[in-house]
Image (cartoon, rainbow, N blue to C red; front, top):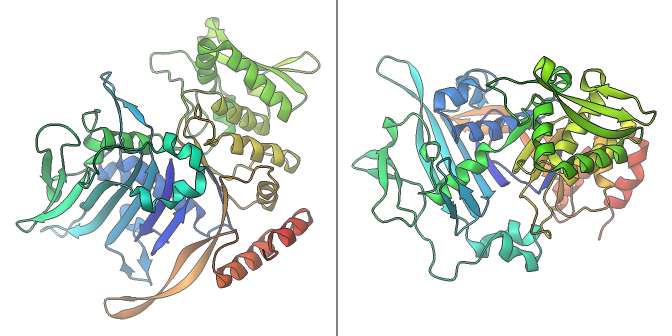
Length: 463
């Protein structure tokens, strides 16, 4: 779970930070930076798994375009990210090794610089990488999001000693920037590497539980999903071949094979999915998945209240989106974060309340120690969606932010430069009066639906 991100020098972000709850909604008009935030999270996730060149090439635009543009001809040469995490207590690697981490609250930092080599060719270099445990005394996120009786489960107490050495650290050694990995509880002195000799993060190179905290942070970041559900992908049966996978992709591929795996592991889960779908769409009674041997595929079929059965090929996009979220909820292999852009697409406004409730159910309930540390971050420009978020019966662990582009004046090479940056403000009480006034006025303009008028009036009252 990601609890906070800090960004500098990436796209429209300057001195930016935002805190996340288990269910976070970011609302704002188009081109306000909502998608850029998802791009930043996606880049960090890929840097935890692959090399710099690949991670940057997978982003929208070329590498240069990812650095903040100052005016018309100046560009940032340094990009900084920091993320604070709540990681799983137990980690397991591909060789069967398993360990329990001492500290579940970690902070990871990475700085990436644009440089020019002797042939005048630009390249990217990691100039800072760090992983540390968060100080429990200053860990306000835990205190604000988890009740005191449950904190010890999610952030176990460590009875002996204090960890003062970073798990990954950067230092200058004989004029050379060096990134080192202390032993993390193992005998020996760990290892260190000159930063200019590496083409990927140190974090991405740790593949076993020999370094449990680094591995836990890596596995957490790798698990982040970015849903951009495509109706054609959702409708297609899953072909049975050697390359078949049984986890749902960001486009919605493998929906049938994922459901078939769930059915085989726990037949009752299929009944739970059917019940959940029926609560949301009362005309649909039963979900099933079949092994279509003759066509070498798995196919989903849904029975309606008139006893007719329809395959996924003919179901509406809205129905398939709701079904996908139901499957995620009852999939024991789904852990971690889902980032979902514009979940309102393909959904009738009448169904928006159900979608919001379903997404909220996909996030962790910290009072339930059997829960997985699941999280959902949404970006949306739908007034109806945001209005339904404020109407949720259970507001605990729900956070709404309002995104807006603002103009900022900064000094670049001793010259003033004007740039447009993304600012996100929490729509809640307890922030400064100026920010409250700005946020409420903007959100009222943005959320123009008459449905929401009374909610905003109540919400804006002084305590």
